[in-house]
Length: 419
Ligand SMILES: [Zn+2]
Image 1 (cartoon, rainbow, N blue to C red):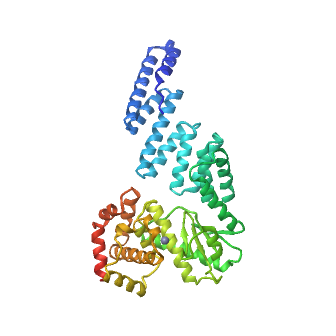
Image 2 (image 1 turned 180 degrees about the vertical axis):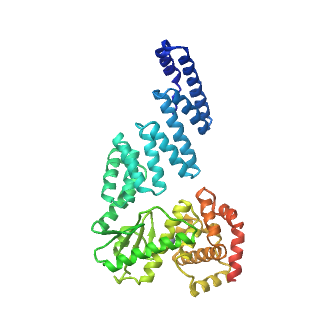
Image 3 (image 1 turned 135 degrees about the horizontal axis):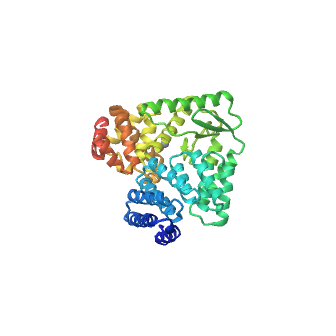
């Protein structure tokens, strides 16, 4: 909320300063006008303009709390309007200015902490959220977000301590109980895990993973980071990227996923190193799964959270794995029977209802579709495709922008190859 009562503040200021000479009164009037114009601009949603007015007024009356408050608010509003269009980088700049204008105000610190979390800059988020709590202990949003930041930093005990407090004060906090239970479950499994790190990855693993295996896995991950970053024309997610390695039993216990799921990315890469019988998986299989999940990290970083399923899985398959002859045959049979999915049916949540066989076909079709795009156009069109999605464009809208194709055209082109 903006405070319009600047007139009163300035009248007081003017009254106190008046003996010094009439020019001060004029200055005060100018300040009042600028505040009022700032308020109208703010109310009309023209935040940039409002900031300019409040800045001018604040320069002339730097001790005025109301002006400081209004300027800080307008900076936060501009940051939010940019963030709503998914443009977080400049939002951060506005919030840093807001914090320097009003360092005792907890609100821009929390807002900045939450944007840093969106950008996966976990350590920066922790720094700002801890500052917020020092300034105003008990602020629930700050405690909840700080819990999330600790969790992503793989410090589950500290995360739970923050969430415990939030749930004590507000037991029905939306979604938090589920987050808490998930973290608790993971902590039960991972409590005794060891940790090791390379330049961009932090791995947690059970005791019986030996030195050679650990080095091999870190090497695989770093190689994926380097190679895929280059292949995609320079996409490098912020680090450290958390990777949790399990036995098959531990993986199921921590994630509660079905037996046919080989690995997952839920903000952290999680993968088993053994099969259900307890045998170590072959090195090539571990590499394939970790690379597949790492592509999801890249996609999340480059395109945000709302990416069509077919693209996310298709790119992860394309960059980790060749299509097998068997998969190509399945696809040919599917097209011969006219039983392929429409791309619009492969966009999201409806996939949860598929049978394992149908899901396998969905993966193969996603793989073949992205493989075709990747082989023809490489990163030159893939990178802008991902970027368009990050700005909130729909799957087909982003495809049209980057590849000049509709879903129907892309479906026909793929059918043409396999028919
Ligand atoms: Zn996947």
